[in-house]
Length: 267
Image 1 (tube, one colour):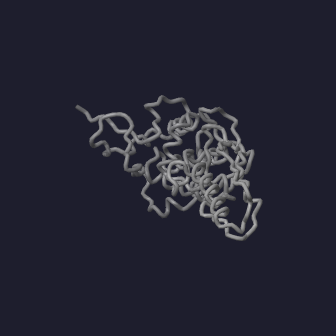
Image 2 (spheres, one colour; image 1 turned 30 degrees about the vertical axis):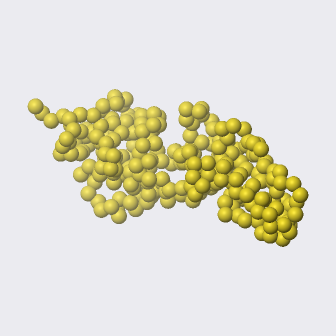
């Protein structure tokens, strides 16, 4: 019979005690196994009890019934779409400490290359970010970056931070208006000649921000180091953070775009 509320969603990663391949053995008394606790994605705990009458662990038919009950609960709750694929409707969330560190890396990178970020820059930033946080555990109560659901959200169920791809990081940054504003101000504080970056890359586009679905583009020609030198880690990226202008002028969206701009060809 149904126990959890309608619409409740569960993930295997939130229930590490559950073994989807578990089979209760014949003639091994496990009365505690007749109750199963599952935690949904909101952190609420639900208890499921086996309603099979006549407990008899020496009966193959009865043990098979317990295994059937267990598999039905696990498959229906943890694998509702595909019995072989865990439910994962929630993208990896960002903690406040991850965002703050990322902003430091971005600002330092812009100051280092003296221009806008391209593919090589985002790869270097992602490498440093992952070296700092990948594999780190977020504990209960840790602050998360606010979203449409409201700010001041906290971790309810601990999880391990996984590696983030450069394209995913860049796409997320674009949604953070305060971070975008920081990038624009940092770009505005650079020498005017830095705006010459990316010239010659405007084939096939006349105006606006050029984005590639295949991936991010390279940084401009002002940065001629090798990939290994550029990806040397956090210390290299943080060296130039002190060069940032303290009170940069305000800029418009067009003057300080987050991604590379293309120039309109003269008619």
